[in-house]
Length: 93
Image (cartoon, rainbow, N blue to C red; front, side):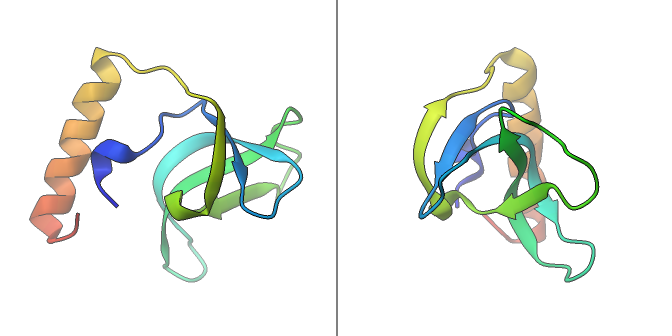
């Protein structure tokens, strides 16, 4: 996926086949156990973190609906630019 298409943290989404929405609190995460990269990490909405194991890793193509889009400002723009640069150097999009 294109880095510029990443949803901002704070976004609330419904995943395909899910009943509960998820609030994104991180982007471009790696599962420590499997070393698999994911676009997002989130927690159920509105409950939030409910302890160990309550986080969910998922990719952009799993998002069915965006209920709320998080904050997008100059600071996020700078972060996304640096993230895009990092992945270009790594040879990934």
